[in-house]
Image 1 (spheres, protein in one colour):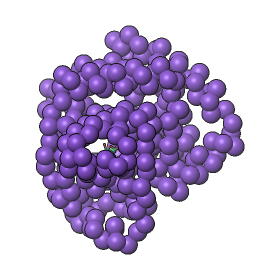
Image 2 (spheres, rainbow, N blue to C red):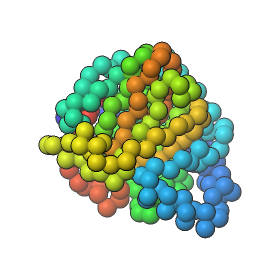
Image 3 (tube, rainbow, N blue to C red):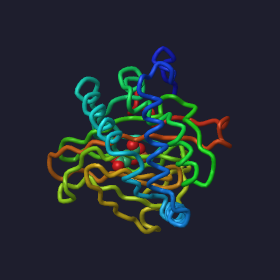
Length: 261
Ligand SMILES: O=C(O)CCC(=O)C(=O)O
Ligand SMILES: [Fe+2]
């Protein structure tokens, strides 16, 4: 799948007036909040085991508030509605609105500053136990998704890139649906995804979130979905995705780009 080169906006920290402040704030916050090596060790262990780790306090509250504000403002200007199925993930549905990477890169400041923050990437590398890097493919660096109507869902899928951080900006309570489900330690064969069989042969975990939660997902080996809303309600997330350093030159096909275009 190709995206238009004309849409590419390359990040230049010198042109982002808040980049340095955001990076410094994250650096200080991470030192203060995650200074205990033993605690960090068990966080890494849990992330490895579950393919999932809640990291709600990973950035200072004021950064989180700015990120949330920007996501809402971008949605009000640039949301595109999607209603489709994706063949390489077993025809699972995507029913939501989203703001594309290129619109966030063009019109946003805070989300790109956080995504490219050296302090954040360094800390994520420690949690992942390997070097991670900005996604070489611009169009999957970040996205804002909003479920809004009954039936809206981000159907079963894996990620093209290994490490995602998801910011739950707003979620209704669990009685509305919209809950994350995960099947860790599964592989995505794009020619034969066998999603239903993975679901039958493995435990499926449910992860309940509150507005303001942030979590990491090992998306390439954790089959996951967001359950359909069972009532009209608003659920908004930002997904940021990074690559592993040692894979910076690997070939990746982007079939799921259909709903990011
Ligand atoms: O909405 C969520 O919690 C998960 C989002 C997700 O899986 C994705 O954007 O790829
Ligand atoms: Fe995902």
